[in-house]
Length: 443
Picture 1 (cartoon, rainbow, N blue to C red):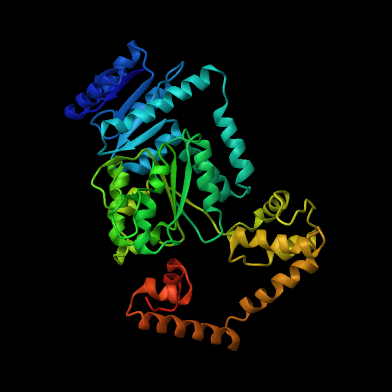
Picture 2: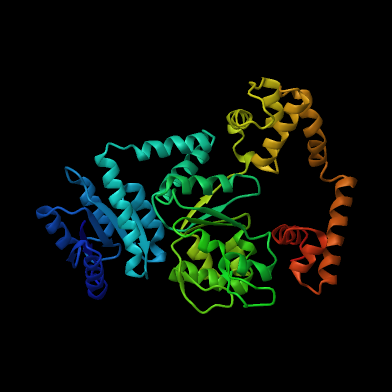
C-alpha cells in the first residue's frame, strides 16, 4: 500500500518509513501537516499515518481536511501519547481508522495496516461489514435507552481497533457478553477468544495460568504448560475481574501490554504476544490506585478505551425488551408475551444481580408457570426481597449487617491481615471480600 507518514520528529518519521518500506509498502515522509496536504493534492495514498501533536496543522486538522475532500479518502491512523487518548477516540468517531499510542515499536503498525487492506478488499467486493456489526450489536446488546445506545456505539468503535478495552460495571450487567461481541466484530474474530477469570485462581497460580511454565520450574512441573496468553495468540485475551491480579504480578501484565512479549514461569525466553486485551472490573480501579493496591501505570494502560455498563435499575425502560429477549433465548423455555402485571412487578424490583438475576428469575417463574410467566410466580420470588430491602432500618436487617461485620473482622484478624486467606476462610471471592470490607468500614 501507499502510506504517507506525517511526523515532525525526524527520527521517528525516518524509522517508520524505513520499516514500512522493508515490509513491502510504499512509504512517503512528510514533516508537517502542510507538506502532507500538498502531497495529498498531487498523489494518491491508501493510508495516512500521522502524529496527533504537531505545530501548524496537527493530526486532527489533517483528518478534517482529508474528510472534507471529494472522492475516496485514505484511511487515517493517528499516533498519540496516552494523555491525548480522548482526542484520538473523538477522531475515530469523526472517521479515523485507528490510533496507536506512543511510545510504540514500529512493528505494531503492521497488523493495523493489514486491517486496512482487509477493509479495502471488503469495500471492493461490495461488503457491508459495518452494517453487519450494527445488526450484531442490536441483536446481542438489548435496550433502546440512551445509555445502551451509547454502549453499542462504543462496542462498534472498540471493534475497529486493537486498543486495550476496560469494561466496568456491577456483577451481572453483561461484561462477558460485551467482551465477546467486541471480539466477534473485530479483525481477530477467526482467532481464539480466551477468558481468564482472575478471581478464581489463588495468587500463586494466576501467573502460571496466564503465562504457562517450563518443565522443572517448580516441584510437580514435570512438563511444559502452555498459558492462556499463548492460547490466545492472534486473538483476544479477556481478563475478567482484573482487579484480583496481585500487585507483584501487575508489573508482568504491564510488560505484556507495553512490550508485547512474556516469559513463562521458570523461563528466560522472550515470547512474542500477538493478543488484544480486554479487561473487566466491578471495582473503582482509580480509587485502588490511590490506596496502592493497583498500579496506576497499569490502570492507564488498561483504560485506553472504556465502556461503563449500567445496572438494570438505571435502565428500567429496557426491562420489557430485555425480558422478552431472555425468554426468546430459552431462559425457562418460554416465548410468551409478558402482560402488564408482570412488567409492573419486574419494574418494582431493584435487581441487585442485574441481567443475570433477571434471567434466573424469569427462568424460575416460567418453570413454575408451566411455560408462562405470571405475576403470581414472580411475586413468590421477588416479594420477600422487596420487603427486606424496604425494611433496611429494621431489627432483622441490622442483625444481619452486625453479624456479617463480626465474621469479616474475625476472619481478617485470624489471618493476620491477609485478605486472600480471610476470603478463602469465608468461601468468598477476594473481590467480594474487599467490597464487604469497604461496606463495613474495615478496609
